[in-house]
Length: 87
Image (cartoon, rainbow, N blue to C red; front, side, top):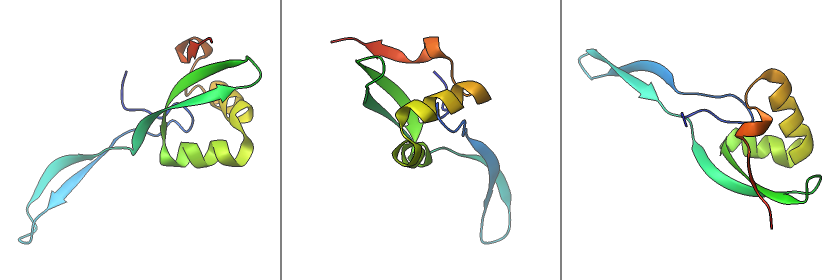
């Protein structure tokens, strides 16, 4: 799976390394991604998401269900991409 947040849709940006003599070389600015498991109360199961730090703050602010519905509406993830781990 690529380096894209499943909640916010953030992905790596391209830019330049700039040396002291102002020489520029290409580089990527990666997203602060990590894999985290959440308990999804509506489905009564655990799900595993690849999210960024800002995605985690979004989940804390609006809730897991609203964040997932918003991400699916905007096309950042699909329901079948979310890994279900049923107890």
